[in-house]
Length: 398
Ligand code: 13P
Ligand code: SF4
Image (cartoon, rainbow, N blue to C red; front, side, top):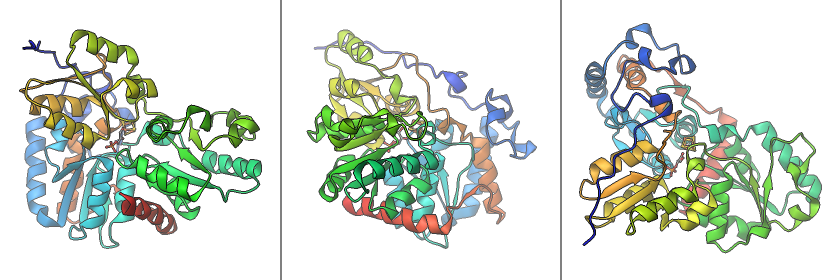
């Protein structure tokens, strides 16, 4: 019988290195870089008071509001979510629940935009903290992507054979670009079927912003490395992303050189160390991790997949998880009969998800309860139309 050592849960680091208890917003070291126009009266409130106030506002709103929570949200926020999920599940939920007037999205900006695009015209989407963005999404600025598209058109004498595919983690403008150019959106839970769909329609895929999700999915589909090209968007316009004509012509997948700063930290050494310490360990990682980490893992999938994988593992299992620490810590707590730990011993949470402090949630919910909408996420109508095409294509595929 295997003896299971209790593996200590990693301490939260970076912006949240004070631990997982709620501290007043004013005491958060990074507050100055967050949304600072939250009224003064919310800044000094402690955990217990915030819980009470969010609960009261929730009760006053009743069925008029639904609170959606991404798996990476902090414990003191996710506790209020009516629905928890990965980004695909939450987008699908927003598309199929027209009954709530308000969708309070505890997640990051691109997720709230997707909810706005897919929900009805009578629904309003609210993001508690407008500074909750995504560093990966920010790596694909619209002018850079449009510039690259024009360079690709010049190289291939048009773009008829290129299908643009954007990862959900991107601005609404890029989803609209894909919708307008015969392309589609994908998430970490449906990337393989989306890429297969795109390859049936074109010779090549232009995939942004996450190189790792694109590469890992292509590997799983049997596309060799030589048929992938990496577009360096940091180079000056006209540099063809640093690629030669030859490299571009033999590519079936042109990958944007973007990454997630949280997932790029996971390494092969960490996987080997986990296997050395726990011979029976199962390693499960998110597809935003580097290819060598994904290859060395036992399983790969979206946040919802990872949660299911841990839940379905037998009692006594040892699980090393390569994803954001709030989810890993929660899974460890919910599965006390298993040993669940994060692959990375020096963990950095998703600092932008962390910005959704419960004080912001209390603020937006209390305003809604009073009939005022603050922090509404509203994608411009024209952008919405095209982005909806790309998102609906994705929903039909999954
Ligand atoms: P999921 O779609 O797997 O929830 O992932 C979203 C994300 O931002 C991962 O970093
Ligand atoms: Fe973006 Fe990475 Fe945070 Fe996901 S974990 S929201 S990809 S920064």
